[in-house]
Length: 301
Length: 252
Image (cartoon, rainbow over all chains, first blue to last red; front, side, top):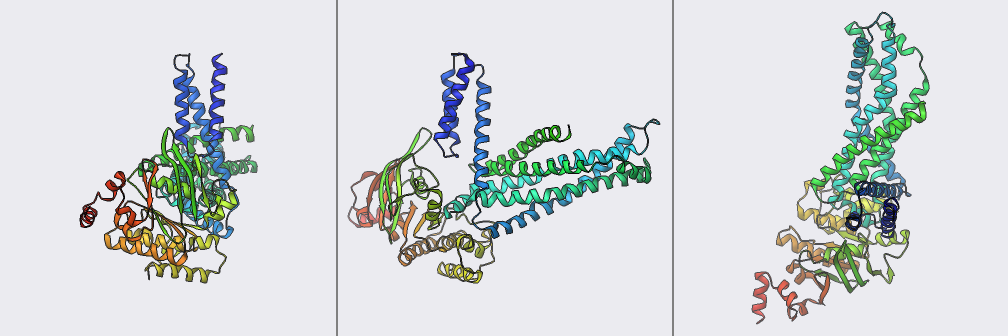
């Protein structure tokens, strides 16, 4: 049999096996099956094995992530409790991130203005271009993407550590035994909170980024206030704000669900909670960068 | 009543439980005993649905727990109370909120009544004026007692206790044992206690199941336990010096 077909035969067999064992927590068993297939393939031209193992692992995690999302969106037991938790999470994950967002935005806006000026300091380029470049950088990329990457670090690690700790301390088991949909109860309010509050954080970031740029530009004398204001008004497209907010909502979804997935499937003790927390940040960041490219191509081109 | 029929559980290639048959009676403290790693906690987790067994069935009043649909299973679960080894109280909620949690999620009563019910449960486990304390501010024994209060808040038909005495001093352990016994009698629950504490077995065990190497090795009551000719059971029961002295006093 050609290696190509053998590869897919093995993959199909593995997926059927995984489907037959509907218990999603049994990662180890599926890993063992992967190893068994690998051993069987040894000496039979299994050069594609690393690719095969990586594919199986990715397919497995995507499948388990999808199953978790299905549980998250199941009908809540009591809406009033979910809503109260959503408001609490808006405070914890959103309002309490305001300080870092404000600080970063103002300083990054200031740096963008000064760097733009130093890089395009030419008599052929009009002074207002600095304001224009600052606005475009802040609205299109800095506020939605860079701030989301920062929030993936702060909020993502928080979510993974909280849910992971609950898992290792059997609190999630306690919820399940009571008959509570633990995935929905723990994750849905966080998801609703971040989707609602992150766009506000990003709008504040846009304002403070441009304001920081204006302050730095005017104070350091690299641009006059009038030129900067003219720059930020020139060629403004409201769609760019919409594009930024759409990206923010998608990134909020990614940060919350990827981090919650890592926390929810934590096994072991405190060390594993730390590992889950780190993975949450790394995978969220990678997913954000990929989604950023896809959304930019889809919405701007 | 809970019936376990031919229950088997594997983790990968390791067979943790096989061929377990047992009937856990209503209004009795049923105990599952065995050495660490014998599979008793896995058996309890299969019974409450945290693990799905590969073989056999768990029947709640004759209905197979793993074969009923999602909504029915949720209804059964709402009739289960469980005390975890580490209490598993929610860190972000205070004592009163922890006990009120199942009432708020599933109860249909007004808030005042929920509070009264929670206070009644806390009073029953002798926790008074600690409403606003968080789990981290409680001692191990108090955490267990709050765990029991939360487990009985919904007046469960089935009560599971996973090593309720672990990490407690002997006096507190007796208090917890008494509580479990009294609650079982008052609420007529089917109580299942997982333990390897022989004091607890002698205090409260009415129906005892000895699990060894993933199999049911012995089943009986307290008196039969002391006179069993089963070698593995005797090694387990009389491992401690206190129980050896009991055996000596009995002329064994």
